[in-house]
Length: 236
Image 1 (cartoon, rainbow, N blue to C red):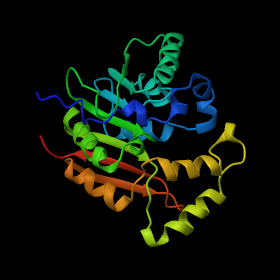
Image 2 (cartoon, helix red, strand yellow):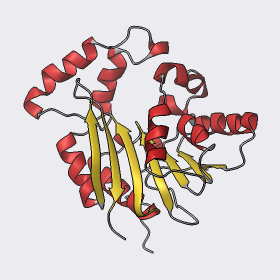
Image 3 (cartoon, rainbow, N blue to C red):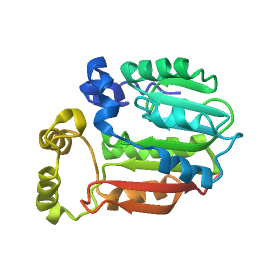
Image 4 (cartoon, helix red, strand yellow):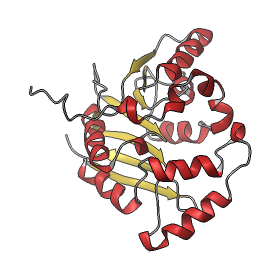
């Protein structure tokens, strides 16, 4: 295999320094306020059961991965942040879970081993990659799934035209929280827009299709800044 180290992206350098900071990570769950119940119910409805393998890419503090362990045979919690994975490992020990594996890697470096995954889950992680790398990442996700496997993807996605970007972003920032410990402030959202790599829905959706997925369901928030997709791998 040729040496790609000179041009392959370093995902840790694009993860956002706060996600590598143990002090920030300690308050992450309160800040994010995520309820994974609806996603677990959705994936169970699509066949997730005691025989399933789930890969959680960008697992963060492992909320989804640890909750899914009660249903799945195998769960792989993947993140580039050692601080995030330290929280996952601590919670695994507290819960006595033996079917969850922690892997320090990202979309571009995770090497799946064993039987193909039945489900891949990712929430608010893909936007750390520029579009060139998103397309490569999605092809790698498809490669780790069995035919008919499911990708459940949440992310900050822009569902508006470039001509409408200014009013859409200004409206988004206007509804931000004031206290950073309970959500994302206007300053944090502005940093996201300026320095991270959320893309337009009309670019991301063809990427999913070209990677070998059929988009079975897509939902977008009224703000036009967030989307969720349920995708099924259509190829071999």
